[in-house]
Amino acid sequence: MSSAPMQLDAAEQALLDSLRAGDEAAYETLVRDFGGPMLAVTRRMLGNEDDARDALQDAFLSAFKAIDRFQGGSKLSTWLHRIAVNASLMKLRTKRRRSERSIEAMLPQYDESGHRVRDNDTWPTDGAIALQRQETRQQVRDAIDELPESYRTVLLLRDIEELNTKETADMLDVSESVVKTRLHRARLALRNLLAETFGTQAE
Amino acid sequence: MNCRECLDFLSDYRNGELPDEQRAVFETHLSKCPPCRDFLDSYCESIRMAKDCCCPDPDGPVPDKVPDALVNAILKARDASRDS
Ligand SMILES: [Zn+2]
Image 1: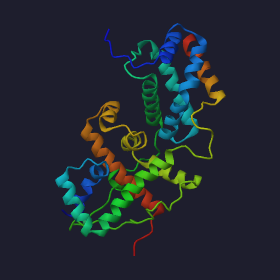
Image 2: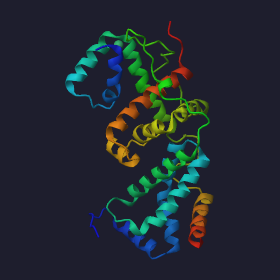
Image 3: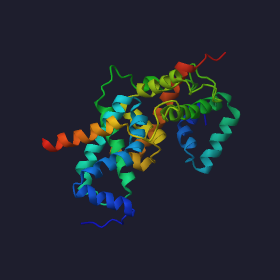
Image 4: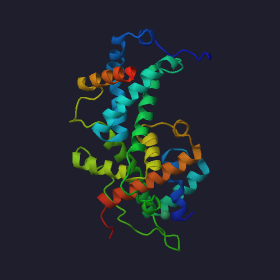
């Protein structure tokens, strides 16, 4: 058995011992004490309360099954965060899109001389678009959800969950250069979609 | 550097990962090209808006707490999965 350096504090170790001993109350404690931040993750990743709750349930069922194999090489909260991200990714994959627009159609277009074809490419970038409004938040979320799945996933992991390039690559089982390329294209596409929503044709 | 090439550097620039020499070339282009400056602004603004929109709604349910009904559903699902 590999002996990763233990990252657990005494309380986490005690909880883990109780879980492994099959103590029913310990399972409830795990959900109540660690579930909140995990629910925040599934909400951010999925943008929809029902899906977020489903994913949290999936995450805990995975965690319960895997608890015997947890080696204590990371903090318990870090391990659970990763499981919540994975459960969200699974959920995202099962949500079939009606008709996915290709990423190319969302990227900036250039003419033969290398000049960008002007789209609705300005909108107030001084924070004037108030995201306090539920309607506006939903418009932004819709734009994220419009991205093809492989791009949306990278954007969510890098820019929303703030995983680094390597962590994202490991989680998706792709190379770091693929993560970088997809992130850039996802951001460009999102910019275009937001410009379509909030933009005003430049004079 | 033309505007199209400039575009390829946006992501690394935004991430603070552009090597010094390339950053100097990129910033020189930006200083002479208002459309690319606007584009960079809106690129960064898009990332900020995405981040903001996914953060918990200040008027929404209390964050960082699993609703009781969901706690119970999870524990019940555990029982069900052990029976099967
Ligand atoms: Zn330019």
